[in-house]
Image (tube, rainbow, N blue to C red; front, side, top):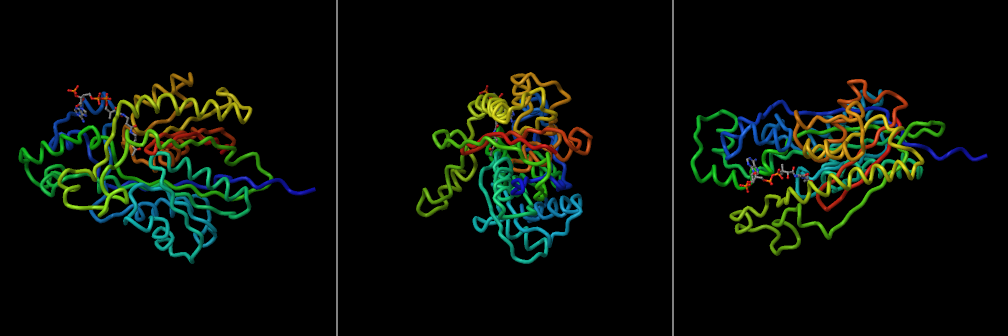
Amino acid sequence: MSSPTPRAVLAGTGIAVPSREIDNAMLARVMDTSDEWILERSGISTRFYVEAGVASSDLGAEAAAAALEDAGMAAEELDYIVCATMTPDHYFPGAGTSIQHKLGIDPLPVLDIRQQCAGFAYGLQVVDALIRGGLARRVLLVGSDVHSCLMPYSEATWKVLLGDADGPLDAADYEHNSRFRHLLVLFGDAAGAMVFRAERQSESGILGSALFGDGGQKEILYVPGVGSAHRPWIDMVMLETSTQVPVMDGRKVFKLAVSHMPRATADLLAAQELSLEDLDLLVMHQANLRINQAAQRALRLPDDKVHNNIQRYGNTTSATLPLCFHEAREMGKAPPGSLVAFTALGAGLHWGSVLVRV
Ligand code: ACO
């Protein structure tokens, strides 16, 4: 009799959070916003920024090392790395090989994926396929994003924001920052990592996934400037008109998130012949606390089956799912044997759900 298909079983988790804590009052020094508005509309109180020069691969390698330690696995034992980020250290290559190099290990297959806020969910599906297909036995999945590098702030803005110079900021900088306030208040920097190992006789592991992409909705959340849609891919006009800054129709993204995340989760559970009652924990992308509260209501899940931490970290894009899960696990909300759904929606659009038995 042939042995069963291997499953991708979660062996360890780790996170990396920069030390520079940015509260809402600090942002209100450099743009027309307030603690009250940010809290009420998004639920966010603080987020963390790296020091200048700390890249996604630095945070990613730190989270990876912590996850490997948690798994009791040496980095040399890995046979595949998957890295999700929308803020790689460079335009190319992605951050994956830099993470491999920073871990100090020999060459191995390294895959970078680009699904923005849904990057980690797609990464879970890739890990599942690699392990089920017998292509890898010990896989590191990293989600890492440094958003502070995307903030279109002048040097003077940074100084006033961080308290290194007394305000007020000059009017032109203040107006410029205020133009993007709906974006700038939401994002933070962080990384999260998970390590998986192949096991043939286990009830645990990644059970299945339901993921979607729809380019028809690309323009509600994208970076219009910089890229191969332009020749040259970057010029001074783009920078002067700030088209390197993302465009986001927040209301449209909000509406899609509150419907797509719960539907993908409920459909995936049904496809796995499981129900919402079987679910122990729902880990959602952390883009807005109000989105997650609406999704929780749509699924009629009690508070003890949901964990959110956007209040402290803001939206860290591909790091939100591992960061939120790591924290929930440390709080005892995801003990061995528990059934966890991960769900996200982000630019692309990409969205979906992944089910994991811890
Ligand atoms: N401070 C103060 N006022 C603000 C701010 C701010 N930071 N941002 C916007 N406003 C103002 C607007 O200008 C508007 O003013 P007006 O009424 O005078 O025109 C008012 O607040 C209301 O603006 P809305 O955009 O309607 O506010 P909303 O309640 O929708 O909240 C938000 C905006 C927080 C962006 C919300 O729509 C949201 O979170 N959407 C989803 C975002 C998301 O999920 N993004 C995906 C992840 S990102 C990724 O994938 C890369």
